[in-house]
Image 1 (cartoon, helix red, strand yellow):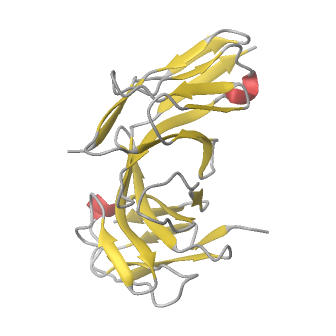
Image 2 (tube, rainbow over the protein chains, first blue to last red):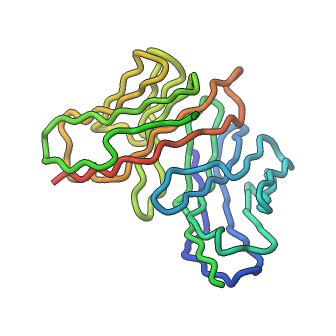
Length: 111
Length: 117
């Protein structure tokens, strides 16, 4: 079957710390991979994406590389800010357009 | 402004009383979808639609119905709501895909918090 597994939170970091949120997936075929961010009281927003193996998605200082050999799509940022505090979701979209989301990882950045 | 709107934003109802949550998008998107978000479970897809009159089940379709009579609207219908359908619901839309493979961004609505007593 298809599924996404994310590291459990919550994660609390100091400002300017390095962030990694692990994401691994199980999928048939060749899915596209996404990271979405949800700020309090809002819907999800696309953060970055990758459509094939070895693609690197990046946006707002966040990066993630589609690793087919390890079925992973870990999210990283070199220096987090207080404004990065949110819930982060890893997701896959399999051919046929069904989506699968991880359970979300809550990040709090303290000054 | 390009957006996905949902109504109502908050709803408290009782078991068995039929309800509809509306979803509308103004971006001429072919693809629309409904999700529910529950603590510890993340988002789970309920139904999705590739275009008008085309709908498919997601991971958790039981107890829900949808329709897609117009491109812009994708209502979610609970014929006989039960307490286990208490959740936060999101509608989303994106451009359609050629060949079924792609990375088009999904735009999410603001969410509807439903409580079934």
